[in-house]
Every structure is written in structure tokens, then in C-alpha cells.
Length: 305
Figure 1 (tube, rainbow, N blue to C red):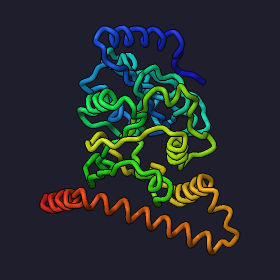
Figure 2 (figure 1 turned 120 degrees about the vertical axis):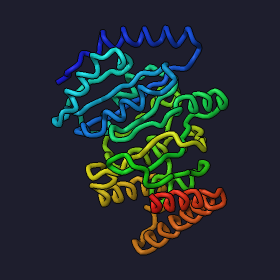
Figure 3 (figure 1 turned 90 degrees about the vertical axis):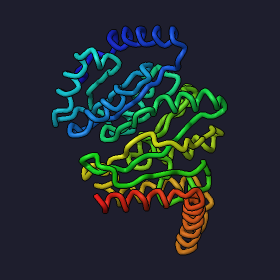
Figure 4 (figure 1 turned 120 degrees about the horizontal axis):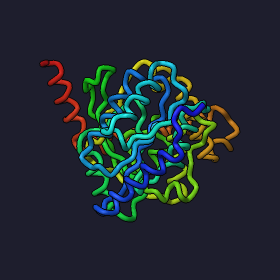
């Protein structure tokens, strides 16, 4: 069931946005937010997009028929002139991956971001991303740093990341590229790259590995671009075992030599060894860049408070 007719409405709004975009010679940014029963947090996500200083954006919210008041909230906000660049739809889907693909296909922007409904962008995020794409025309995907926050939005950890490494991407025990602080050049999707809708926990990892293997270029921006929320209903917190299993399945599919090992013991041993190497490489680079000193200062400040 579609609760908002996106056809004529979105086309008319897109026309207005695109005219503004052409007049000011700034790239249009499309933000796609998959949504399902996150009424407690989605308004912060919407506000974090709306309050960006860069006005050349569209925010596409793809809801999976939420039952917790999210739809009412979206319906109310859509009537507000301040949210004229926000468009939404609520209909049944197979999960987050399908919702994201729907949004990516609707997106008109030259730069496309993925913001989950319980996360939020930090002030100045869009300006930094636009500048990064303009300064690096050869780069296809940018990812930045982020703050980890609790359910109330209080900062609990600073997460600084490293330059791109295909080896660390494939073999690290977790995905180190934060989707909430990742932006894509439009050509990534125009060339037929979409999320695997059969995956629901490690679809981002599989997507990044596939893009890397196809030659798309990643680059890290050493700036805090977003807040990632740790909350009890998120997949990260509620289903760690399923996430870990799907992560491993993705890695084995992308590294066929591991599957060819006949001995389960040898396979597990080599896999653990590769993971350990990836962990050491990532943490060593973060240590050399002084990231852990910053984290220590934050923890000390929280204790003093």
C-alpha cells in the first residue's frame, strides 16, 4: 500500500530542486533513508538532513509500512514547507536492502548518501562531501569518520577511520567503512550496481567488496560526518550472531580460495590468520595517526562529567 503518491508529486518537486541546482551550479545530493518502526529516532535523522547549510538536496524516505507512528510523523512533516525536499513512501518490502534499492533508483542527485533512520548527519557534512567530490573527480565513493552515540544521542565514542584497503575490507572481522558516513557518485548506480536483496545484515559489506573488485575508487575523508546510534532495536545490537554469520558467508563467497580448502580446520585457521592480519593493519594505522589518544581524551572528559 502506497500512502503517498510519489509520481506527479516527486517529479514536480524534483523539477523545482533541479532548477535551483542549475541556477546555483551546485550538485544535487540525494539522501536515501530506509525506515521501519523507528519513530523514536527518525525525526532526528530528518532534521539532520533538513538543517544542512547546503540546500541542494532531496531526502527520500522508504518506509516498510511502519506501525509505530512513523507514517503519521512523515505525513505531518510532508505538509510543512520546511520539508519540501523530503519525499516518502510506505509500502511492504522484503527488508532494508530492497528499501535502499528503491530509494537509489528514485534518486536524482549527482551525489547519493545512505542514512539509516536512527542515525543522523553532523552539521557541515554536505559541504565537506561536495568539496571532496569536486576536488577528486576520479573518486567514486567517499567515507568519513563518525561519532557513536547512545539511545539518547549522547556521544560515547569517536570513530576515526583509515584510508581504503581492499584487504582490510575483505578480511577484517567487522565492516570498517561506516555506511552512515558514506556517499556515492551517481555513476555507481547508473552502471547497474545495486544491493543484494537476499542479504539483510552484511549487504553493505558485500556491496563494497563488489564495487572494489569492479574497480570503483574509495577515499577516506578525515572529518566527522555523522552520528551512528547504538540502540537496542538496531540490527547491530539485536542480532549480532546473524550479522556475524552473514558477514562470514559474504567473505567466503568473495574469497573462493577459502572455500576450496577441503579441511574445515585449515579453512578456519587461515581465515582466522587473515582476520588477525587485517585487525593488526587497521589498528596500527589508527594508532600511528593518533586516533586512540583522541578517544582516550573523550573518555576522560566523560568521566569528569
